[in-house]
Image 1 (tube, rainbow, N blue to C red):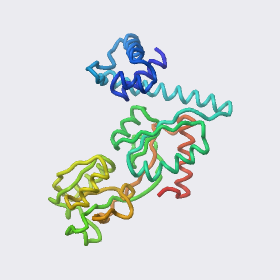
Image 2: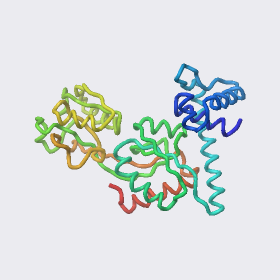
Image 3: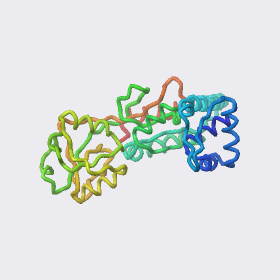
Image 4: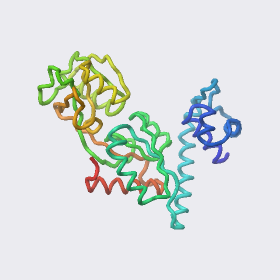
Length: 294
């Protein structure tokens, strides 16, 4: 078993096909196939299903992926430790972000300062929904992820606090209220999204046994805002995830009771971070302490 074989397996899991994995790694498709076959032969288990252009993991492959990613992370950490002993800071840091709050309000200034301090470290950022960020952290596909706290599965660092707000059409019957109760949304045309705080929104509604009439489901915040502005439905989102001031045709209202939300960093273990990740976490703590986010 070689690191190259594990890297090919991990890339194939991310890409979902042999051709995309080859492009990701900068090698030929036959080289990807050869490396994977050699790994499967050594482990005596099939890791990937060959289904035309798609190549999903088998159940065994999904179980072994976390171990492979852990080995690759430790390999990278080992190289970074060795470089640090020689006074060199370099390598690649993998970070997962979950949307507007982290991608627009936290990452730009954090990455800019990190690159100034660690110019030889390449920061790779992948943006996904909340559930995928957590999945990637658990599978060790990324070393650091932005999540909504608390999350007992990880070591976490709180960075910024905001609240959930109702997004209402400006002419809506509820727009004149200072705050919105869950019960106010009963049977209201409603937009749900898997992008950001979905579980917290569900708890807020379920706590009052409220069932809005969910008729739209959007992944993109811009789509949600467009339909609210046209008067088609109401929605709930995090204040840091929506633009200020509100777009024309939309008003924001706090929820009652107030729904506090904390966003922060999550890692599998603060004690096992690579030097590049440890530096990123230390900088994030420093900036949060100085209240530089927001």
